[in-house]
Length: 157
Image 1: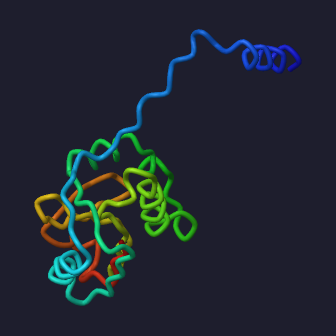
Image 2: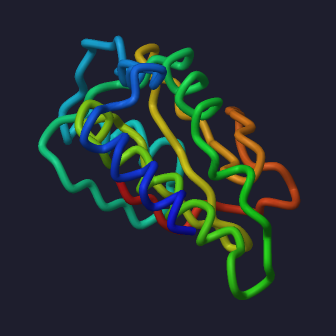
């Protein structure tokens, strides 16, 4: 234990010449924006029964490939599902938190709840509304799958 402590102290003073530099963070490439009213209208068309809460006056639209790269680097989907302890809502909150960092927090990316399930969502540069299953990083559009519920109740971005 003393040897470990000493080697950590020595490497702190001298630095570690074999230490790799931190990789540059992945940043989104999109420059396409959407304002509050247009995003609200798009979401209302996708989820007519939903309560929709938008927290900003405008958003950066998502580049689908950027989001796929982000999801591949993120470990949310590797978490272990535990009913009532770390379940669908916890997965979706965690993934939303991962996106809530400088460079990514302006994206049209959020959380949604159906009558049965919680997951994430995004709007792409093409104006396509995608659902994101944070437990397996699956991106889908064109509506809910039967196991996900009958309708979207809530969207927060």
